[in-house]
Length: 68
Image (cartoon, rainbow, N blue to C red):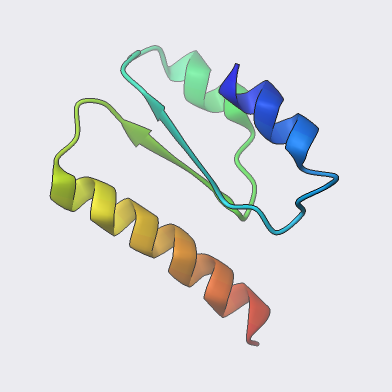
């Protein structure tokens, strides 16, 4: 559901960042996501610190890409 929603929103919000979160351990899930530059994945369960770091990384990645 999440990947399909992100794909549908992409044309109207091309700079949107997406953080996918899942508790499933099947490696196929991550492989099927086809993560792009503005996307990241976080495996459940996670700590508050891990969430903060993932969000920071996602925002910094975007910032670095827009400022060569």
